[in-house]
Image (cartoon, rainbow, N blue to C red; front, side, top):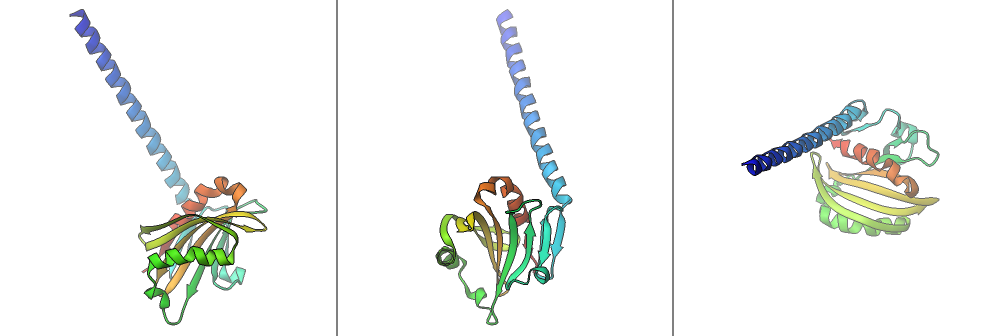
Length: 193
């Protein structure tokens, strides 16, 4: 009888321990998600009639009126950095709306070849077709050289006869430092219907 009581007590103790661990993990996850959501609610929003994007308040926004570079709609520059991380949007449009006729899988296959011909020491790391509320898009991750070794993540959307290329670029040595914020910014981008 004493042995049964001891077994029962040990099982009860183990159950309580496991339950407490699960509760602690759940609480940690809720706090982490809450902190992330709370941080993003303080982000600024840049919005046009075609799209919107959110970004941290300390990042500098330059619109096409400030930049004056063909095709670049905006740039977001990370704060306090001489070789900054940057997010920018390039919109390519044609009068014939030829982008509507493009097969996104074929474009995904051809785009790395095009980038390889344009960028010095281009090296593709990843190419994926993904989907969000703005539709199907291509996610490319790659490295290249432009005065220094760079790492980039591109999100490419094709909508309404245009190709929206959202670019996150940073010197490769700083990639891990900016990766989460850069990807969080990219993931807030929405094309309007």
